[in-house]
Amino acid sequence: MSSTATVNTATSLPQEVARRRTFAIISHPDAGKTTLTEKLLMYGGAIRSAGTVKGKKSNQFATSDWMEVEKQRGISVASSVMQFEHEGCVINLLDTPGHQDFSEDTYRVLTAVDAALMVIDAAKGVEAQTIKLLEVCRLRKTPVITFINKMDREVRDPLELIDEIEDILKLDCAPVTWPVGMGKQFAGVYDLHRHQMLKFTPGDNTADSEVEVLDGEDHPYLVEHFPIAHATFKEEVEIVREAASPFDHQAFLAGDLSPVFFGSAINNFGVRDILQALVSWAPSPRPREARQREVLPDEADFTGIVFKIQANMNPLHRDRIAFLRICSGEYRQGLRATHLRSGKSIKLDHAITFMAQERSHLSEAYAGDIIGIPNHGRLRIGDVITQGETLKLEGIPHFSPEIFRVARLNDPLRAKQLNKALQELGEEGTIQVFEPLEKTGMVLGAVGQLQFETVAHRLLTEYKIDASFDSVPVHKALWVSSADAAAMKRFLQSNASRLARDAAGALAFMAPNRSVLQLTIEKWPEIEFHSTREVG
Ligand code: GDP
Image (tube, rainbow, N blue to C red; front, side):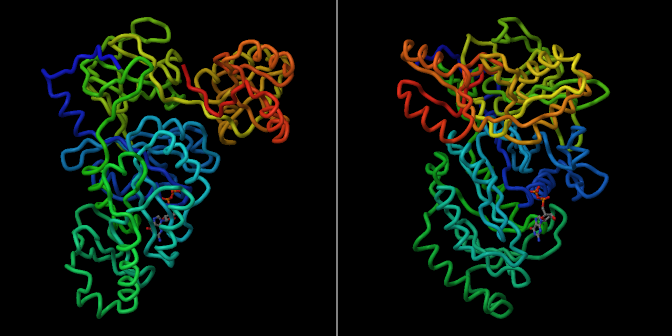
């Protein structure tokens, strides 16, 4: 690895970088992600009281729910970014849509963070969405902190929950706190590192309330008031001490081991411990792999990568915000850099940051931070903006779509406009578009159903095209490549009717069903089939 980078020592850049923590909060819907986000923001002083973020069942909308579609459906389509300070650290919290119709956005958000906070509903354990999200975390070796929520309810056996996380998610668990009882008999959690019990009091709604601490695991209060829960706890803790992995910082940073905390988000219980873990254990911004070399966060030159585009955040302005993760250096208002895809100079003037319900302009930001750059379509997902040399950053993949549709025009005269619009939405990353080699009509691919609704909405409002979507006999699209040009040529000839090009021109095999896919893979050993394709 060569290093042409100069490390900036003249300013406080290294200190600013060192105090940043950028993480995403992930869970299956209803596990309590929104509730926990709100409590974290309360601790960070970004909001003052509960109810500011959460608003699904009222007329108020969650901080992250900017888009019209979200308002109509009351769910999070878009991931949002929130920044706050805690104990000297600047924490960037990225929300991920939790609904089962979630989209590629969710995956891409995970490429912009250095750690993840996984919320598990203690009554339900590991659920479908958690599994998918953890797969992406594993790809990138993202360190994961686990919060087992809703201990104030009748929930599952905590040992069983730990087993499930280890078995299904293939993640070693190191319990940091352990619950004493549950539901009506929930006495609190015992901190296995500090050897103290944190007493549970229901209904906490402010960040300031002090949690009562009882020393030792046999405190008379416990023995007297919660004899059964205490006895069970003693048995469980013995097993945990013998069988569970101890916390190992290196294993955590490598994404192999997760510290586990129990609590109740709605009661603001256990939240402070998570923040503590983020501050003490989660990594500060990590170096970013580029094809040429590693990009270090404290290099003086600014480098950032666009991982998400949000359209129509404000319907009055028809604006588009590119979310950019700063990988190195710092942003100052008016910063000039090169937009690598076009090779042109770009001036970053009005970057915005996100604080609870407000968007505010910011004058400086550092590696690890996420900034929003208003633009009119110039910036796309995977674009790199840098003051340094030309770099090819790794890390914003397209994931093989799971649902396929073709667009049907309700006004046939708009066919040309439809193709152009879909191409644009494809380039922007809203949906994946595949144009069959035999020109039989554009096929759209998405990770979640909701992406089609977003596309329909945007086609109507931005392009004035009224379209609906029909199903299409495609089971899977896998990108294909081969080191053997002659084999590739033969493959192309034999499979022309099942091949298509995506928005970036990459070739994909569109399998109509599982068995055709299997047979094709077996028949063509020289061809590689990929379930992700890197953007750029
Ligand atoms: P999300 O879909 O993951 O964002 O979940 P929410 O934060 O919206 O929570 C889903 C439901 O679980 C809501 O009704 C919350 O009030 C409830 N909830 C969240 N945390 C807790 C908790 O600690 N205990 C209990 N009993 N309910 C909770």
